[in-house]
Length: 95
Image (cartoon, rainbow, N blue to C red):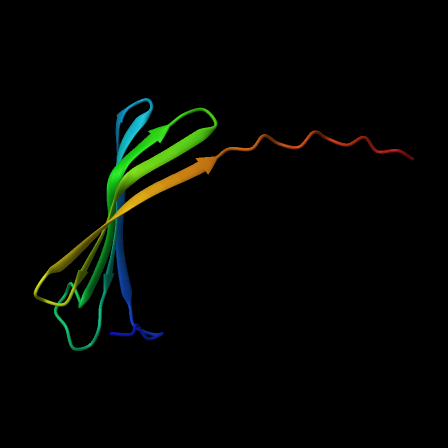
């Protein structure tokens, strides 16, 4: 089923810190169409854990896709990496 522009998508996300370097993450998107119930025909969610270091963040989890009202669940593995870059050194003004 194609998703058309102008159709609302509801997002519900959250993160809960377990300790200084570990979080539980949940990101959820509900595609809402005119001919469906509240959850809509498509649900997309990422459920997993996030490891937080000083200059690195790693996400491990599952992407869950549920299509239609018969709850056909398709789990896909998810790995995310985010790196923190330091600021560039200031350049001196030469006049």
